[in-house]
Image 1 (cartoon, rainbow, N blue to C red):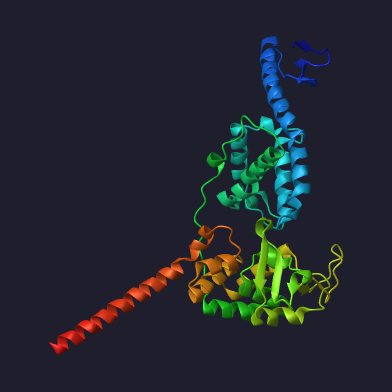
Image 2: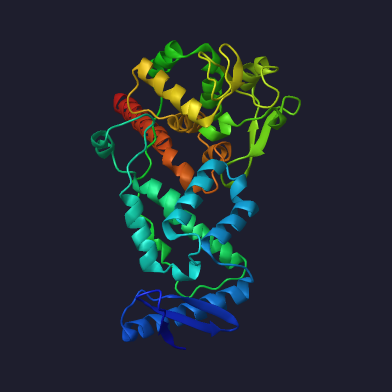
Length: 377
C-alpha cells in the first residue's frame, strides 16, 4: 500500500488491492501523513465490504440493494409509490455508490437528523416565507419514511447472506411516537358529511365507513377481488397480508350498483373539469386515485365543518363501534387485519365503559337487595 500525488490534482491518491479487488480514489488530503491515515481507513472499509460481499455474493451499493429489494417485494407493498419515493430519498442522500457497510450508527443518526428538519409538503405554489411556516414532519413520518426503510435494506441484504459488523442500532434511532388516538364519529358529524357529499364519491366513503379498510385499500379495490357469489372481498393488505372482508347486505348494497362503471376498479368519480395533461374529459368517469380521494375528503370535511377528523379515523370509528357491539377483541383484530392484538387494544376503552356500566348495575342490584332486607326486618 502506498499513496501518491497525481500531477493533475493537488491531493494524494490511494490505490491498493485487497482480495483481488482494486480500491482507488482521491484522499482529498494534501499531506502525505493525512493521506496515509485515510488510506488505512479505506483498507478497513475494503475488508468489511469484501467480507460482507463474500457472504451475500451481490453488490452492497445502496442503489443495487434497493433495486433488488424493489424487484423482490417493495413493488408489491400496499403503497408502492411511497416505497419507491422513500428508497429514492435514501439513494439521493447517500449517493448511489454508497455501500451499506459504510453506513454505521453515526451515519444513520445524521440521516435521521437531516430528515427531521423537513417540513410537511403541501400542494400548490408558496413563497419561501409560507414554506418556512409549514410544520415539521412528525416523528412517525421520520420513522416510517426513513429509518425503517434503511433498516429494511439492511434486513434484505442480511437475508441474502451479508454480514454487517457496524450495523446501526435501530432501537436507538427510532424516534418516540405519541400513542395513536382513537376518534369516533358522532351522529351529527356523520349527518354533516352526508350533507356535504358529492354523489359520485358517496359509495366510496360509505364503503370506507362500513368496512374499516385503509384509504389505499379502498382506492385500489378491483372487481377481481370482489366475489358476490362467495360474499367476500379477498385481497392483499398492509404488509402483504391476505385480507378477507365479508360482503354483508350493507356492503353489497354499496358495491352492486357500481358494476359496469369501470372494467377494473370499483370506485370511480366524474370529472367536473377537463384536463388535457391527464387526458380527462368533463363528465366522464375515471378510477379514483389516492391523491384524488384525499383531496376530495379535505373538501368534504371543510364543507361539513368537521374539526380534528382524518380519513383514517373512519377506520377507528369502525373498530370502536364494532367492539362496542360485539365485545370481542379477537373479532375486531381480524376485521381490521391487525397482525398483533396490541394494535387492537387501543379500542379497549369501549370495554372499560361496559365494565363501568356492569359495576354500576351490580351496585344498584345490591342496594335494592339491602333495602328489601331492611323492610323485612
